[in-house]
Image (tube, rainbow, N blue to C red; front, side):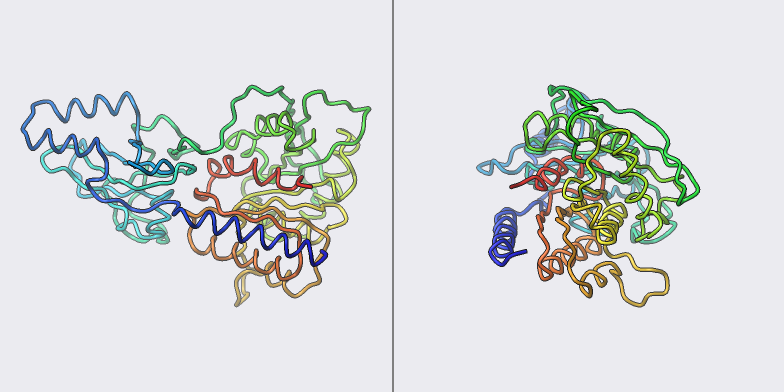
Length: 418
């Protein structure tokens, strides 16, 4: 990277971070912040009959959590989580999402307030309107650290929230990125790719863009790890459709690669040379032969989230002649081989080795635990120091596909900036 470009990247990075940090992404709020809760309390103080029943009738229609504007602060909402206690309840905790950003591993920092004499429990946060996150509700929580395994209590989905992602409920505020499904639609097909290297076959979901021409010019290629989840939970096909329609990315083909079996995921995603070779030496040539993908490293992106983000960065570092671009969402950069005394094995390798010609677009959620957040900031600093082309961001969300789905269009399109 030349010095002018390096200065430009660093300036853009820190300018965007300073702008984001000028508006706090979330904070806890007082028990009296929610106007609707204040209205309910007033009705109870005035002994109005049926006030609680009326409240729950409204909530069943609107769903939870309760989202209300913050006066004179258009960038924020009051987000109030609710629980209707239908049995003896000693406490109710909120787990993950904004609660994780506030209390990390300690559920006692995210307990709901009980309105005495009713079945209403609630907790309000002030949240910036670009937030998207998943969460659980845990009545009668043991209040053990979330690192305790096994815990004596199990959280559950919010029964009054119609929005679920896997087993969790989720929140998507009004300024979060969404897809509208109006763009011309590409196609996906499911197939299997046997591996001579790994002696096992992997499920492949292949995306081809609208108007795909197998006889035309080669297409840029995206290889996405944890592929099945990205098609189902992150709903990535319409994201690609809309980015292509808006000309934020060129028409491209994508291979969504699943692990050989769910039990193989951790082994494949933890800086695994054999799996990296499979991706570079078998998946990319197969996509070129079958789906007209480009063989040029500058046109190839390897992407993933969590351990997939770690493996994506590792794979490009090992094979920069094949993958010239990395898309990493909440990469698990804390990972180290068993027996290593120091954490963050891959970051240490990148710091010690000469830079390779790879461009990196990466992000991390501000509601994530510090192990995840701090090691991504550490990787950012190492990449800057080594002179890598980098686009880095911190999104208002947690560690999960709902947040990654919202952030992904910006991370992917950043790799096509001129």
